[in-house]
Picture 1 (cartoon, rainbow, N blue to C red):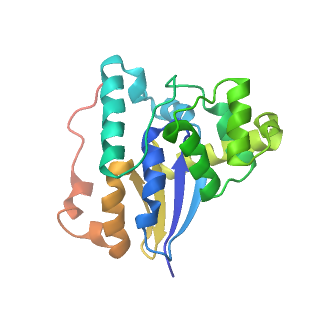
Picture 2 (picture 1 turned 30 degrees about the vertical axis):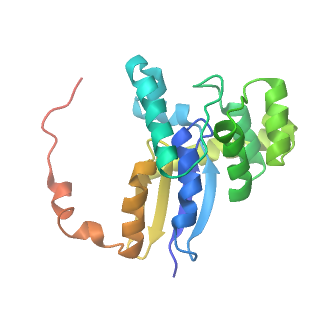
Picture 3 (picture 1 turned 135 degrees about the vertical axis):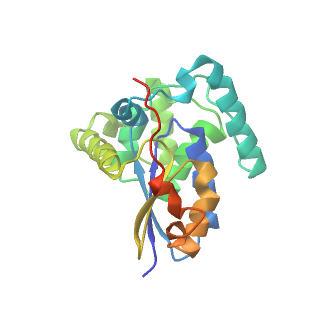
Length: 212
């Protein structure tokens, strides 16, 4: 049986844009299901702050995203405001049960062309490009699906985006961030790799100190 992969993303994330572009590197038999989630809710659940919310980290994060995009041949231009409120475009994608092609058009709009999505006019343009009704942003079923996706991700232990939840014969593993993409590809070739060294002893490492 071929592994299945769930791609948890927020349209806010430039790294998720790069990750989406790299999905073509996966074996052809991998079934990928994209699921939009609300990063802010995930960060709040785990008591974290986003990198763009930490002043010295913000520009570093943007430069890192741009560098990674360049290294992988991905067109990247940031929108005029970031971070922005992603709730409405995420509802559009959730309500439409967007497939990978639609998600790709969404990321190309925001981070390929650097266009905003946080005004009414921008959202309507985004919806037209993606191919979804703009009215879904206010649809109760769309709101519920986005919440359900986010709650599902939290139950799995997702703590950031992009996260790939990959299920193989040995169970489900989470791979966070585009910089874990190569590790995920190696795991897909051998889904028992974490059972052996140099990974096996990691589960036995104790917590030495905890900040209050």
